[in-house]
Image (cartoon, rainbow, N blue to C red; front, side):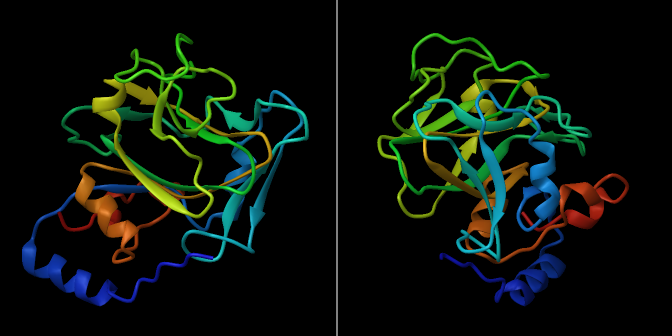
Length: 231
């Protein structure tokens, strides 16, 4: 298990107080065990569970297990209640972001994917991998693309140990409105953890290094300023 700690949090808070500079971060998933209740859809019988035996950070991760013999195992929801994150070049309000971070691990099999719909739509299917992709194809893949659904291949091999990915959503997919997510291991078992959105890359790098904490997305409705951290 790879575990990142928040041992430098005090130093970070001191830096915040001294710098006076701010930027925004949204936690999509970290330790919220209720998150998987949002993943209501599947194309073939697929299991979504909270896994407390392995994680990138903290105590738990999301375990998506596909049945034997399928290549499109996934759990997803194109319209999660409360999700309307606008991906823009220059975020300036509470519902706007540009960057994403997620951690993943493929316990077995040849590929793993994560998908983000635009207003409930998953986008066109052209070639398995395109870069830059057509607008509306909000997919990241590591290893083999076993469905052929168009997206960006971030690595030629699926991660057999925990790896985190930080990407510029605007540069990758242009402007869109993220309303849901699909966690797609294709076959076997895929583990997902530490999913965050942010205004800038720097916030996500600090999260990956375990130096800041932010509030869960479910707590942002009236207190966006409470989850700000230094730029």
